[in-house]
Length: 272
Image 1 (cartoon, helix red, strand yellow):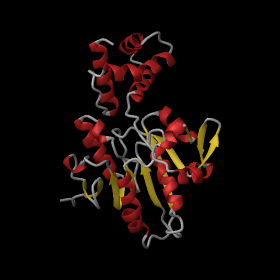
Image 2: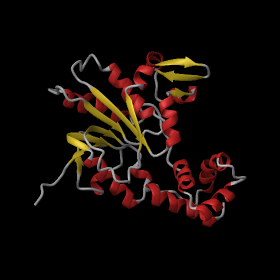
Image 3: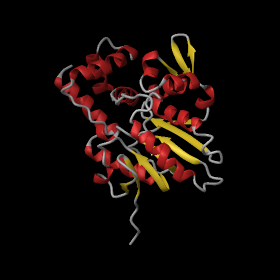
Image 4: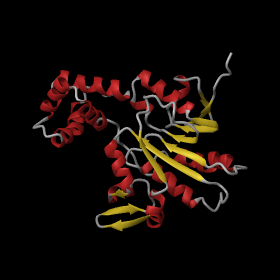
């Protein structure tokens, strides 16, 4: 790829989704964009980029932006966050909660491992919180990632990343060369394509939001926008979970530190 082509891709990703793409990493760009070029009927990436310049076709631009989105994930990634959710956040929310469900959102679910980890954990904890009801929501920028997530199908390599054998046997069935998650767990999740830097004023009412390893991959203005959007989506007493080392309090006054590293709660200042 030419330097100006790599710069164009980085600019489009920053403008559309706030992604930080390093134009110097030509190998990463070529690896991510080669499948897009083939799928869209181009002979090579150069022809794809030329079409981006001349057509400015929204669908094609989004195909490129989605392909460049970070896609590293695993089941029960960031084990400490799941431990805090299980032992501190969830008991506090479930205590005395009657009627209203506890609403949990995986805000950048990728190919589904994060939200399915939550589904498995809640299934295993059902006896501890017999009166609690849960609603699981999952969103991502990429339609292709959402399609894979909703299928519930994972390779042997994917299930080996983070799943002990007892969980694999309890929640999955072998389906040919892949593993299929229990339909019972899949059917209870609500899916939606969302761009976290867009207007999310209608996305409200969540008690827990998982969003690790997202703002660290974004340009500065977009990181602040995401932090504000997530804080505004919280119910009183709710929490947003980020990866260790991500500190949204440096980006937004709407969040403050919660119980342990990576956990933050809403902190809206009173109106004057």
